[in-house]
Length: 436
Image (cartoon, rainbow, N blue to C red):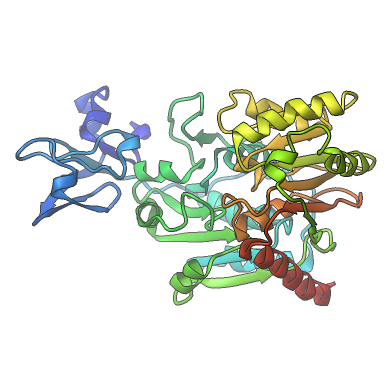
């Protein structure tokens, strides 16, 4: 029964649930899809679609926007299940770290009961996750239900590891498209943003990490899902190192913004070194032309491991094979969204089992490795936005003692994204220098 609490489910998603169980949980139902003139509106994702684009028959229609969650159409209803209030309880919290004075100031404000909407705008490596501990602990002790959400599966996996360590006795549910376990009710949920479509007024505290990242940014359906997944009197916290102008404009009237321009270890962000490489797309795959890149990799490996970001899987795969031939004494592998072993490879990188890890955009955010330098091959490629370049640069020098971590952007054209990313990092460092 409790697996229905706070859920938003289609008729067909309840087919395996006994009717007597459904009747014992407070709920209301609404049509899954409503016809409005020449359009339909979906009550799962709130998006509208012209009838001619979503017709199943003369009188039936479906929503194409959230089709990946299972078809939502006019033949179904959406059931919105209630959730009983929890009772205050003891929560075991196991973290021996210590917040800086500035982190502590933000953490106290996030946990305060009077403010319900917050944005933590803090540089990569500033300890945003650690600043959440107070809020999460307060909500759980009060008997509340909490969720920490990210657009990226790899970030969710990372968060799951971190939160299970500091809340060792909490039953934490991890939800995403590649999770092994089926859904089960828990008071602590970590999930991708799309999973919020299946929750309704469930969370006393909802934290959305990387609100500037695809696919969350610019998707009104996901914004609707997050707004309706949190309770009416619940608390919503956004986290970002690189909020876009559109997000800032939207939230400024109702959100309290907390800005932190200095990393927790008090070191400034490594500023990218720009390297012009004519026709990098072809030259990086030619053993005779790749020597300058190899020299940089070997020099960086004297002090750190190397994260090498590529704009496409095909290029990354070909480059990996060349690097293995040219650098035979080093441990080299690659990882992408299509890699079934990617979680294992990321964990092995944490334990320093690889010298060079090539990656697509999937590791641009949320993951932390010690002793890494970063190279972006083809920083001028359209795949790399200003925000993604700032995030990628932020993988360097995030944790541990100073190891001279460096960042290199290889490019053929100095794009606006490269220029704006470098400018933003410099601006944050100027602001951070004043805080040291």
